[in-house]
Image (tube, rainbow, N blue to C red; front, side, top):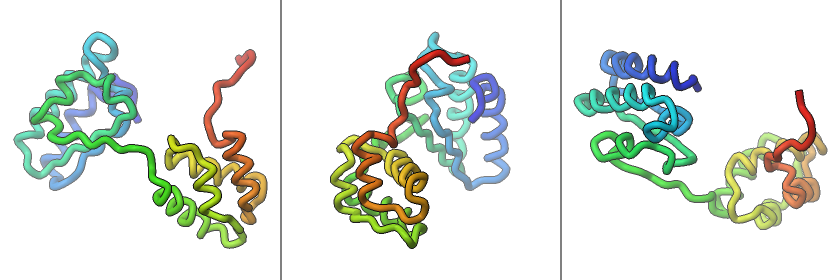
Length: 171
């Protein structure tokens, strides 16, 4: 991830290189950190992206995918048709997806003894894949590779996997 000034300067280079290397996919991760509504961020980043995307529409060998957690913060000019042809909204992972994430990660911990169904039921409905990963990471800090259902339920119950705002004085 680069700061907005680097994005403004480098995005054109990325698409010029894409012309030479295509077919390829350009992934603009967390685009909302760089491309905001006019007047609320670096307008030069927005202008550079719009120019690059407009040039990319002439290229049939470049697919651009952008991700954001805050689509409402993006300028309408960036999200209009012919710049991004489709918008796909991803909801919260289903229970089945969370169970699959747990099983996949726990396979790497052969000493783990976890009732996946109980752990899935303990998570709130609005959980992310990152929440699942962090809950397992925290449980590993307690149990080592022998993660248990009880430890995972404790981490989830205390919301120990969730980021918290620090309280106090920091330098």
